[in-house]
Length: 135
Image (cartoon, rainbow, N blue to C red; front, side, top):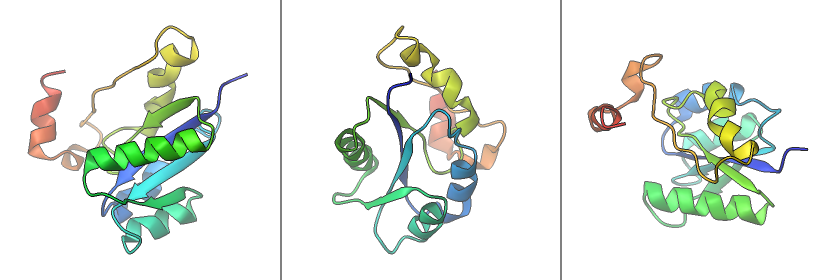
């Protein structure tokens, strides 16, 4: 039996892409999805909630703070594995099985992936595309 997996998606003004991201999350891999939004007025929250995600408004600003708050929520919900994706579709949800494979096989405690900008090249800002060349 697979341990409880919770997906955390930090998202800020991602209303146009979050629905596509959430629609492609493999339900057989992820038990619950937590979307951390910048504020409760962010339209991303409405779209994500309509796709069944649990919504949390950030208490502190910043991407790292959103990740941390999402991870804490996942732990409080009983996650044994926490997976992160971005809400801008730069991380293809269908790749979750590949990324999670070593953890589920008990071969790794941490797996990091590189963003693939080929499917949606406009999703990555210049600094992120540059960073990918370092992977």
